[in-house]
Image (cartoon, rainbow, N blue to C red; front, side, top):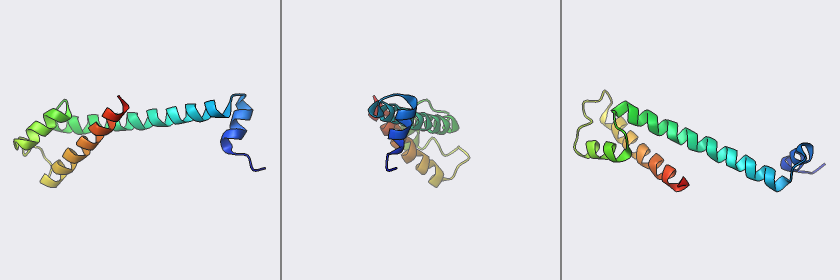
Length: 92
């Protein structure tokens, strides 16, 4: 039997294969967006900021040096948070 997994599952559930693929894709994207939001929240909480803009401002003014993280870790978090913010904007 050479049928696809989606074809077999859609037959079993009694729904169109295209609808099953759409729902699976929606669920996957929603899950990934939740992961992005959680990571973004974790980074912002670590630095006591409420947005990427706030983090960026404090980063550029050198106000994040008191945080118990190395300069490299702060820079990594800066670029990661910027990337996560861009990813979140894509969904809107």
